[in-house]
Image (tube, rainbow, N blue to C red; front, top):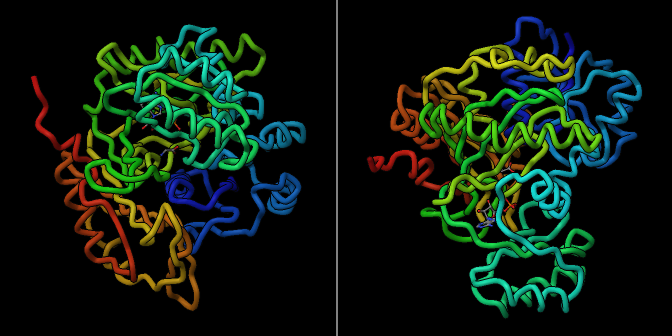
Length: 426
Ligand code: AMP
Ligand code: GLY
């Protein structure tokens, strides 16, 4: 089988790496891919913001399956377009992807189907914001309704700050159209967990849970990023919690979307806050997480292709995934300055030495390859991922590999998996 993966980040490198292990996959393409992905797949240029460009690539390559990595093409309706043409494609339709593309849609949907989430008010004018703020106590979470590449959420420490941020969003100056409506939300306290499920529109099968590190600085400080590292262990949530989340979150979403005639197929990413009152949904994503996918797929022992086919063909079941009991950790190495401005084109050394270490894989997030040498080509550059018998071993292996790698102005967090490594209170 020929498989085409759309996207160019660490998540897509992990998808390509895992799909290649499937006995039935004979050829993997990635569009556009990156320098590192080109070692594991044939990379093909594409403009993922343009449906015609994606259709052109698929017309040329004739893949037996297309897997969509990032949200943008899903929101443009790539799945709808491929299905119209009878081309097998993995992911949700444009209507189903609204769970990620519109916070107001997601919040109202959760309210309709009684899915636990923070209380909120949707506002479209400064006057509405002012009225709504009367009912909030700081800190107050202000969210742009539309997609804002991680910049659409501000935690305001006073009502004045919340009003100012909301006004900037509503004016369109801060985030353009994405901010023309804002959601004011109650602030939740707890640990964040990424809980992903596979669905065929009716049934769900859980993936192993992971924890991301969204802030740039050690100790979870500084601005939000796309994710600076992630880990997964067998005990990050227990069996009982997994079942609770299926029962109270994942299955109600799938049932609700089907009821509203926008059946949800593909990966549903539930971003959760584990609060004292129980888990609450922070956000949905309509795709695999990045970097969560890297440690999650490193724990997958069964065939990823079969899981994608089960989603497309309506036969998702509990047995579709088989997981190892190992722990895995991914440390993201980024360009200095990210998530603000940064320089690219720095030569990267030590990649082979890092990859040669036991149970380690260096996934490329933003690299280019020229004359046999790798150069930085993005904010997040590498996702150094390792497996171990326990989390300590996985983390030590990942950092041992990080130590082999060098590029000018490189940056990485030194405390990935700190919560998982903390002794558990009984
Ligand atoms: P979101 O894009 O909605 O997941 O928000 C990005 C990040 O903001 C989350 O990963 C949380 O760390 C934080 N966040 C979002 N909503 C809340 C909330 N209601 N309470 C506390 N933190 C939040
Ligand atoms: N790591 C968070 C995300 O993929 O949205």
